[in-house]
Image (cartoon, rainbow, N blue to C red; front, side, top):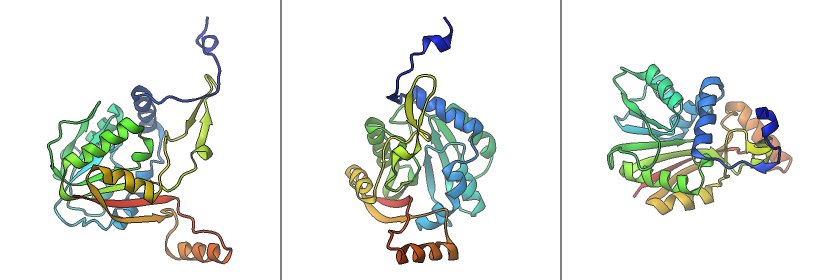
Length: 246
């Protein structure tokens, strides 16, 4: 019996396991040139209000191939950077591109939480397009780990889609019938729901912006005025939130 014949087609929501998540992100690391942080990372950092010229220690949690590292360098930031990810291929990509740089403190491949990172080791933790990918157990573990590794008064920078309609990006596997979000998103956030969740782990909301990162300058103003005249709400597909560690 061939593999194709052995697969029974049945439409069903995918059950994301750690193995499946690592598999799809290893694939994206090899094939994708449209990572969110690659396209919008510089704007995220500028919009966050965090002080790039201060000598801070930063942990990029879910760093992927290291696009935030590249943006920090292009912006002339003085942050000492540590990456952390669950995908072996992305960890290797970042290590190759950053190894030897005086502000690169290394990248760690992890398979479970908590990690062996020291308590209160960092001034800033980045969660760039991470929280929408996490089921309950991984979400709690990630936010708990962010709180543990941040110094008191440190900053947690979170970006995520704003009130995303997950069904709009759902795809079907034609082999087995699994229904899955094309970017492996499993939950949708608003400012209120994100704040309520994060603040349970010892944080307080400092700033939050809902905006369209792909539109800025005069064009952004024109679109905003046009939608206002038409009586439609302002389009804000993205969210940038900064939380302070209590």
